[in-house]
Each structure stands twice: as structure tokens, then as C-alpha cells.
Length: 212
Image 1 (cartoon, rainbow, N blue to C red):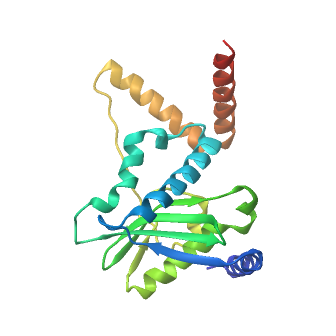
Image 2 (spheres, rainbow, N blue to C red):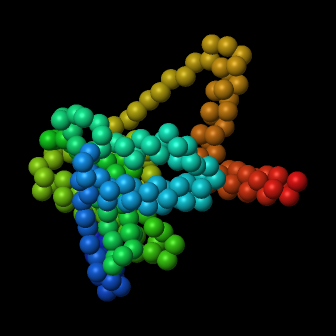
């Protein structure tokens, strides 16, 4: 890790400890005792939905079937891997959470969430990642996999990268239209200016329809 990055992480960790009692807790849901998980996963979903709406203007988590997957993932019966759900709190406030999986060799970083707002300046997500990596090492995992996505924060932690490729081919007129929309939305997600225009247009469109 870059020296300045390590320093900033330690400084933010110190500030958080001055604000309140900072704790990390691993939630291990079971089919017979899952009340705590049921309540906390709702907080994670709310945090992620708020961030998706603010950054992309859309929210796939609004779909009840998608929410159900995260709510009931602990019911999957497979002994080859286990669900890992960790929360970071300051007193009674949930600052950040992570929902992922691990086996004897790999830890899969999949679904991180953060409270944001007045807590954003403490970089709570990075502090939780640091905790998860250390926990993964202590558990004997050989690899910490950040999975897909080119989010900028991952570059501080990764020492290797696997290139993933996809190929799409339209086979009908409808397919060409579909691919066109896919390419447009992928460009919008990559381009900050285009993303800002899209969010403003969507906000205007929604507010205009409410007035009608």
C-alpha cells in the first residue's frame, strides 16, 4: 500500500475512535436464528440503494426479487463456501457493511455499503476493507478477490488484475436496437459528464411527470 494511503487510513481510524466506540462485528445467520441478520441486511440494502440513486439515478435493488436474494442467501445449503456478513459501527450507528462469501482459499468482496453523509469524510469503506483483509489473512485465505468492477478505490489494494472480456453479436433488428442501448448506457456509466447529464434529465423527467 502507498505510504500516504496507510497514513490516511490510520488517521481516519483514530478520528472515528474519538467520535464514538468503533466496533466490527461478524453476523453469522442460521436458518434457526436469523433475526439479527434480517434487520441489519435491510440497513445494508437501504445504504446501497441511496448510493445507487445518487450516483446513477437508477436502483436495481428496488426490485423485490433482488432484495430477496440478499435477504435469504444464508439459506443456500453448500458446505464448500460460507456467507460472510460484517458490519462496522460507531456506538449505535452502522457506518459500513459488507456482504460476501469465502471458502478455504478465497475471500470474495461483493456487496459493500456505507452510511455516507456526515460520515463520508472518514472513508469508512476503506477502513472496513482493511479490517476484512486482515480478517481474511487470519482465517487462512490465500486470496482476497475484489471481483468485477474497475472502481478507483480497488487500485490501492490490488497487486494483480485479471482481464475479463465479453462479446456481443446482434442476430436480429431487435438485437441491434438492444445492443445500441447497452452501449449507450455503458458509455454513460464510464463518462462522468454524460452521467451527470443523464441524472439531471431523469430528475427533470420524474418531476415533470409528477406535476402533470
